[in-house]
Amino acid sequence: MFNVNFWGFINLKLLLDVLFAVGFGLLLFSRVKEQRTLWLLRGYLFLVSTAWFIQRYAYLPLTSKLIDAVVLVCSLSLAILWQGELRRLMELLGTGRLAVLLGNPPKEFRATSTTISQLVDTAGKLSQNRRGALIVVDLGSDLRPEDFLYSGTNIDAQLSTDLLINLFATDTPLHDGAVLVKGNKIISAGVILPLSRQGISRYGTRHLAALGITERFDRCICIVVSEETGTISLANQGKLERPITSSRLQELLEILIGNQNSIGSSKSNLSKTTLSQKTRPSDNVINEINDKESKKSEIFTNKKD
Figure 1 (cartoon, rainbow, N blue to C red):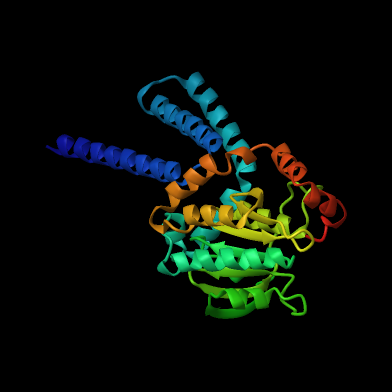
Figure 2: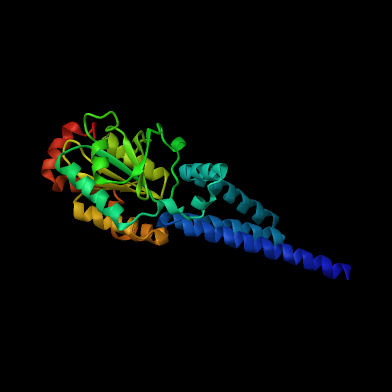
């Protein structure tokens, strides 16, 4: 009787172990949208599963040691490749923001069609006046003051086109920084964002800041308006689409913002249908060549924007 209960207990532990491992794996797969990263993760989990199976059910000491060494090397390699993602994971765990980690954005991040129209209207007017702007739209990353180099000035006001345009007026002290938008509210202005290291020779400060924040936080986007050329750009997941028109911006925002209940699928659709052409660094150069006027101006003024 004792042996039956003992083996039943062992089997229950094994069942729970497998269930927890499968659940953790499914959570990882649901959070990964980029195809190459998904392949790396599948290969790594396959190696870990193989090592566990051999150690538990087969007495193969040499094979077990070899697989353990391969798993260790792969772990170190992934830690280097995914250092930004792992840092973000530790930040979320340390601050207790589990809702963000599980992909459930709080209600304050849910925007309406009015938000989209106001952002598009603002970008269009700023572009016509060639007034530089950088707008960060938080879609569920729950950005905090410690996530920025400088958290800026607290605004906490209802989102409106007039207020956004005034915040980016050239004679105001906040126009050089970014504006943080969550849902239908402007949270802060004059925010200094971390810069990206990619495309330093091609992009100016505003575009590098947009790339930097979207590389680090996958559920936020940045709208950029060039001060010298009036070109509108959109950064998402470390990729920049430029130049785009107001109608194109509205189309992208409707994909990203207009369906908050399925943010994961929205991001996947965007990366496949709208930003797939940005996977190569040369694509941005091609777009600039197509817009000759913008290119001539940005050769001399790129460092400012």
